[in-house]
Amino acid sequence: MAIVVEHEKRRAEILEKALDVFTEEGYEDATFQKIADRCGITRTTLYLYFKNKREIFVWSIKQLTTGVEQTLLAVMESGSETYARRLETFMHLIIDRCTENRRLFNVVLTYLLSAQKSGKDPESRVKRRTIRLRHLLSRLLIAGKEAGEFADFNVKDANELLYGLIESTIYRIAILDRSDAEEMKDAVSLVIRGLVVPGR
Image (cartoon, rainbow, N blue to C red):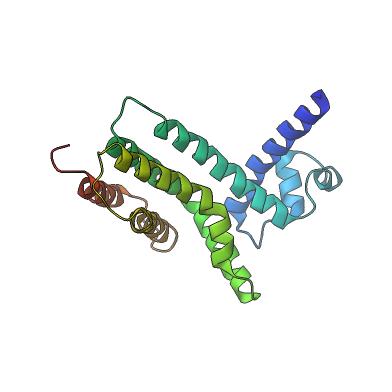
């Protein structure tokens, strides 16, 4: 059992350091050797954990999104806050994480453009990585409606609107190279106030 735990711990460490390499070098210029060097191991050892650079990249992104999801779950389960406040905190945390990882989004963009050029569907790749996030968002919206705090609205449409604000934030960060996300937080707060039943 200790060997499995140690293997998973080493794997997580590799993913964290690999994410730094991808962020610094970009997807195309990051190599298996550079990742091995950053981890202080040989390429042969790295092959014990991952079969190629793409697998490392995908798992690095997964590790990042899993961490975000755990934080968001804690926000959702905070019983002391109103649903509107939880939703606002939820969205602001996502925007903050996007801002903190803005260099990574440039790498992701390059990766998705490369996938598109090779005939792969970048939208399906993004959906696979964000489906749980969207599900958590819907759960929070539904809970707020069931508690009578949110007005009657189509949850799918509200999810699309809020998720669109997240995509807009990523666009501003990755394409427009804007590091201040306060305007997006204000926009999110405005949308959330519109969901709340008047007088609540």
